[in-house]
Length: 124
Image 1 (cartoon, one colour):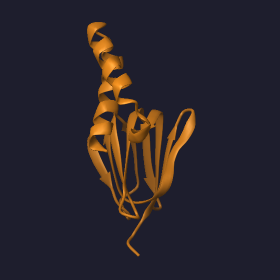
Image 2 (spheres, rainbow, N blue to C red):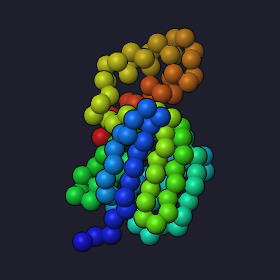
Image 3 (cartoon, rainbow, N blue to C red):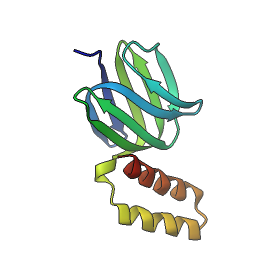
């Protein structure tokens, strides 16, 4: 069996995804980071962006994450997000409308959230 790490992706309002993985890639304030089994312990601040999880069964889970924290120790990775949505839960047409609306309203925060949702779907 390949080395695995246990991943918990939790948003403020719910548990989004939990399972075994071989690699997780996320964006932090220090840049993109890839975490594999045996990685050095870490604690960081998540930036808004897609999070990619390579599952132990060879699948891929992609989520749009909007801020939060990442923590890794003892082959347990916790992604504690302010907002998180799995790519397959995202309504693409709604996200596209939100992006256009945010651009016309010059709402940088809403524009960033809509853009992250669309990037997560594209990466999925």
